[in-house]
Amino acid sequence: MAELIVKLKQHTPIIQFQHYQKGATLRASELKPKLDKFLIAKFKSQGIDYKKWLIGDGKHPALNYKVKVIPNKNIDYFLPLPLKLDPRSKRSTNLVKYLRKKLKINIKILAPSPFFGNSDKIRFNGNKVNSNRTQVDSLILAIYSTDEIQLKFIAWDKNLLKEIEENICLFFLKNNFGMRQDKGFGSFTVSKIKDKIIILDVNELRSTFIKKSNEIFNDFNQLFTFILDEYQLLKSGKNHPVYQKSKLFEYFIEKHNIRWEKRFIKQRINSSKILHKNLYFERDPIDVENKTNNDYNDWNDHQKNTYGFIRALLGLAEYYEFLVDDYGNPDRNYKYVVSIKHKPKPNKEKIERFPSPLFFKVIDRVVYLGLTDTYKEILNEEFEFKLKLKGDNGNTENDLGSLYVPKQFDLKDFINKSISSKWINV
Image (cartoon, rainbow, N blue to C red; front, side, top):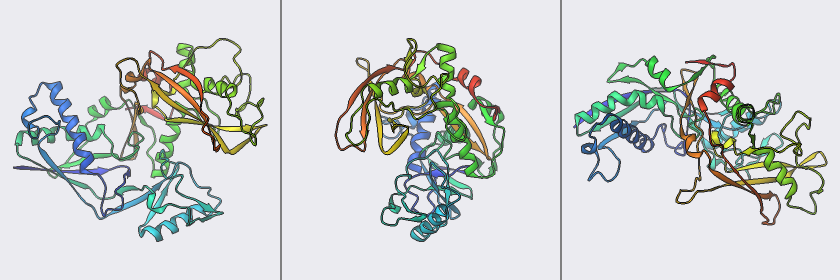
């Protein structure tokens, strides 16, 4: 039996369900399957016979070693929220005091961040926390270790342990952990192997990532605000503080003359409305955006257009929501909810989830951007859109039609042409 000690540096908080456990950070139950998959893929590409290292009869792709994550005492706790609480109010201060008292831990607010799981669990009465409606036990926290994290690998074959040692640095460079890991949460790198200090390989950085931020961020709030803003600008566009169109939208118009699904969906909502006696005037369209001649998202077509389900290329959402507009005044008690369902080709599996092919990795307060080719799995796939009215007690669902994801997409070309000036080459 042989042993290998690896130490990790944590760069960003990890979001996971076991935050209540003392010293909980990285979980061995997530780490080992990921590492197994990474190593086996590497063995196959190099023609290495790895079956002798599999557990049992080899039917399951699990390698015959154990890994233990040594708990830490010095832990910081964060509550990730998608929106920053109004700094003019005392909500943020009151929420922190309330949670520290309830959870018995020193907690900080992390906002805005690309995590949405806590937004519906917190309620206020004015600026005070509504204790009856706030679901403290359901909140999901992010955990950050200020100390190195120790991993202990134990294997019955020294050659397998040697393979782990040779590949572990690249593995952590290419992977994050926990929830929302593609948006930069749960980032670790190897700091020591057998107490020998590890320096990141510049060539591996350049082969893994296409861009890095030209700024070093002072705190997590600034860092995740940057990731959220840059991702939104690429995929969906931004409304605040200044309206900016989606770079993906612009790219497909300029390069392929294909317009995206948002305008297609809005037009079909307006022609397939779910009427509600207390809510809607049939002649009023749903758009609450600036309606100008050069805003090509709004109003009726003046020419025949080719539409595609474009946003799916950067990650598949379960649904889209649109505010209901009552003569220029959006009624926030009601929303149009458009669900998205894949229509698989014959003998093909149905696509339920599809992660973004953009991968954000944080190392020493610098953000790196990596690309994967997973988007190729969704090219030329058909998706249908169904309409419901959120806030209505009825179960009416209207069919809005379907669109295909474009047949072609060059992700690297898109990033090189569309990414903001806040990034530089690695």
